[in-house]
Image 1 (cartoon, rainbow, N blue to C red):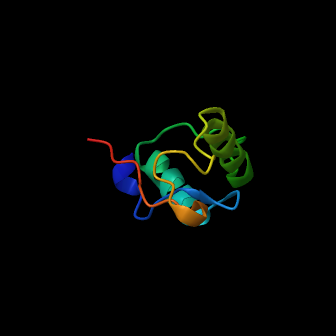
Image 2: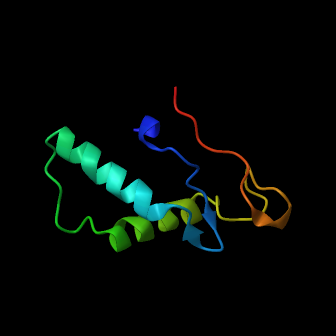
Length: 80
């Protein structure tokens, strides 16, 4: 799934950067794989869930891994 992301997906000021692009790529990939996509998987719902997950893992804090001065993320997740 990580190969589908063309840009880092870290939140900046509580907003996921390039969220719409990531969402449409995710939905397209799920359709290609003929997965059943629940009607509840709206952009708003998934963004809220991602932010909630990052918050619960303390990845929204300024001292989280990958954070630099000013709160901007410089690192991205890479899955092997």
